[in-house]
Length: 377
Image (cartoon, rainbow, N blue to C red; front, side, top):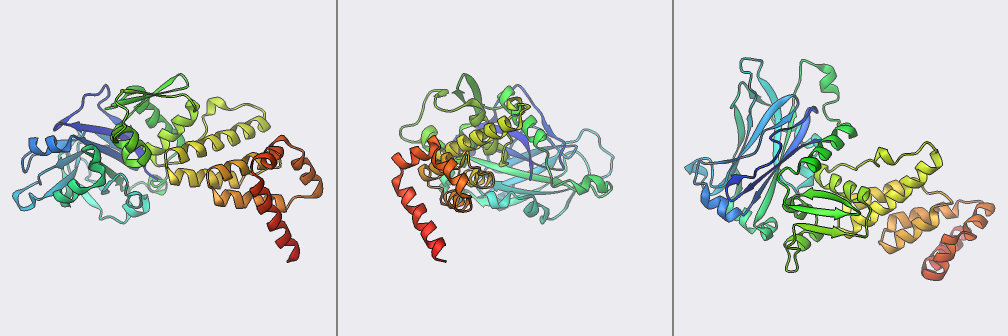
């Protein structure tokens, strides 16, 4: 998995101001997002061979830049958008930096796996200013027809993998990213508001974010932020969600990694920790379904399926029914079928089971049908 290395927002052909000029990740594999807003104006302001440039960011111990040529890098490719990744280290004269890289639109998730990046050609960057890229990355007319341009914007993701052949230990863990690293860089983004153009207020906490990034990952955010009934306010209030859940949701959107539960919430009692994690996972699944983040929803389903208990199966089954999680529902049925008579008595006496009886009788009918079929076998 790649580590998050920041966001650059280009608007009307220029780089938006920010309070932080450099975001670094120590991981050998990281990615930076280049958000281009008001595409038409950016396109007009940059003739062929002129680029818009990201802010500097760090991956694998080196500094990098992204250059985007809206009208092509040269007259030979004037009908294309050209992209370059540029080494921006200050110290020249060292061993050339060897790295692999890929460009993709942010919604092209299959292109962003480190295994895919690792298949790219290794390029040598001998000194500051050395660059490699794609003169014909995508045709301009294809960009202009893209769904990402409903909001006159698109987001390019640049994945970089530094190839450290002299350090076997570093190469051994180059494809891995520790959760604390991801959380650190994501929290740094929230605190510094790098290029943010919208703020969410959730249960008393504020979260700056980028409209284009959210819209590119979620059709719900696209409709909310750019649709006919879009929110025009720069502060959007969400009153029916906990701040820690929304923070996890944003973390997934920006890092494409499953977030860990916040350590500040942990208690010494193991039972309390399990209960809190269960509630957190259930709330995160609801949030993922609400914003149509299907991969996050699927991961939550898998996590919940692997941690079903007698005390939680009723609430989990209700959740699965409400949010159309067929896999999680089936896992609950299998868990119930495997229980002893005494455990089933405990389950049926619980408040959660009484809620199922009163509210979801069809679920009970489905379970009974499965139990009958199992006994017949």
